[in-house]
Length: 498
Ligand SMILES: [Zn+2]
Image 1 (cartoon, rainbow, N blue to C red):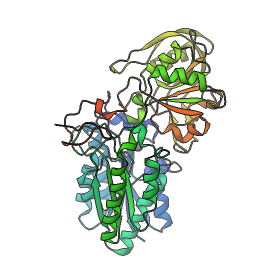
Image 2: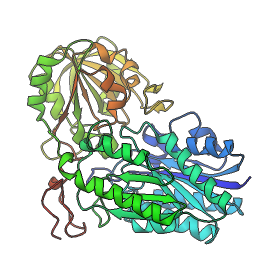
Image 3: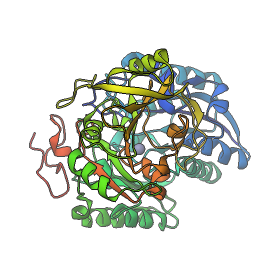
Image 4: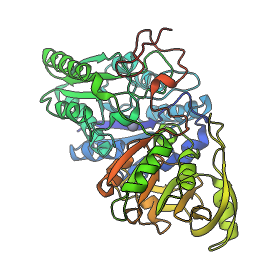
């Protein structure tokens, strides 16, 4: 039995996004539990599909005694502020020092955090944890699939393992896998062999989904890796720093087996480059097609990918909603539109009342503007509910005042408003306001891929829509300045020239 310190900090940073993550963003959590220090970490993550929760369960099952340092997460956005990073990581390190000596450390990290001071937030966390515990104690960490894997992370951590699903239905399982690697190192009394390689092209989020090729086949290969624990991270191509991009990495007892498995996986991803290309639809074309093909019971789902709050959007752009209204879409539900002022106004008006609403479009996104029109308040909610879908199962939402509005000019169109941003990836976000998603003909969702876990089973088809937003689906469209020279900005696409 070993004494193990656990902790974590998750943030996915889109350096082009409109808002930064300050300390209040980690107190709000953005759908995740609020920031916690010490013992309360255990209660905060318990019962949810969170890597730390999976690791805690697995480590306890192996008979280890656990102490908690700090755990925090916030909605994806632009940079984590220095104040937030220093308070959270400072708290983590001081809790860790109180608990020393420990035999091992498990960390629940994202892998794509950029702070105001550090391009590689996780590399900096690992540096400080290593400094606190000394060179001999093993550290293992779980990572998001959207990790921008760095040399510092590879060097400063003894075992890293990433999710193998997008939508991330295996977050808890990945924490347990990282715990297993830590347990293996403690039992053997030595570190594992490790290897990593990067790839030289980017691909947008919609084509990283593990339900569809080429990622489906690649993750099957990752899962068949035997004694080598492999990961493939297609990256988060929205962070402007030299190590942004895709990687493969692996850990195991046999150094030759590890490097061969990593090389084979690297080859498989390289060979699949052309298969990552994906068809995107304009909002107008997508709504026109959905009007013809959607039916109650089998809705067509329109993914408003470029304003995905899970990739740094504020969830308030209006391009897809405007297309639904201008085409008078029948039985259409759009959500979540994040606008606290509009939700507050709906609560002040009350059920059944109508008024002119001016909603969304507050983030100064090129090509976007607020939507204005007459709407009726059909339902109100306090934003407190627990998710039930495969990915967010057990997540306790606190989205602030919510409202369901119906357009007067296009009476088939309803809008779900929330006050705090979260990606529309769980049907409970709609049921909270009495909307059963399956009964609509068209669902417009502010999500890139995570919605597929809970919504694809009820969907006739999914169309990925390119409407205004800060999370560009085609990485060539960002104004990159700091990438490494030669990286192709999309599959088989133009290379960054510096
Ligand atoms: Zn992710």
